[in-house]
Length: 194
Image (tube, rainbow, N blue to C red; front, side):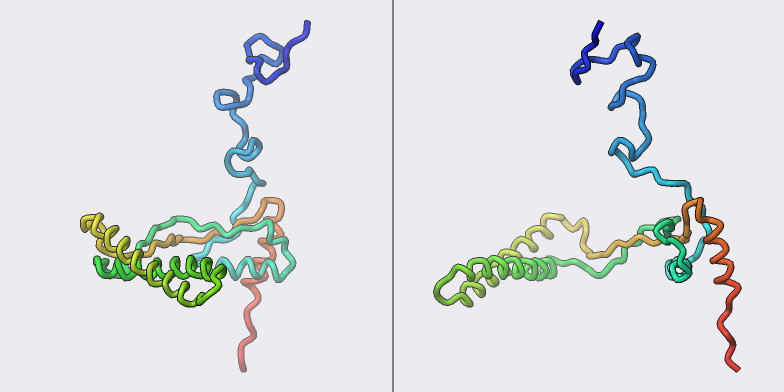
């Protein structure tokens, strides 16, 4: 008896290999990374040090690199992440129109340059007209966009992620070598000036 092996044949219990579920959305789970969904599962890692700021962790990895450690098997991992939104200033309709005019001017300059390339006559005029029209439309759209918010967000800000600690991790097979190099780093002090 032959069984169909086409992709349209359905899996049924009792079929050869029927003790395992087929892979797929309702089938058996697979390890992340092996099926193309999710991050690649890498080797086990060991934390060799934890530092309060990024430059300290960077110095450790730099020290490992200077001592011919295979740093491609290491990582700096930020933990205890905090989102910090720094308020830069108040946003008014006028300021929004000014920012829109700047963005529109750049876009108009780009369009003007494109048309200017194919212009036989005065190409500088084409570029300037594109810049001015872009600035006017950008200002109009900026002002309208701000007016439509209804005053819900009348400020500008910049967001950044900050970590509370930075851990240096290495693959488990290189952990002992990294610890030895790290021990030498802390034992070796710069010579004192006499």
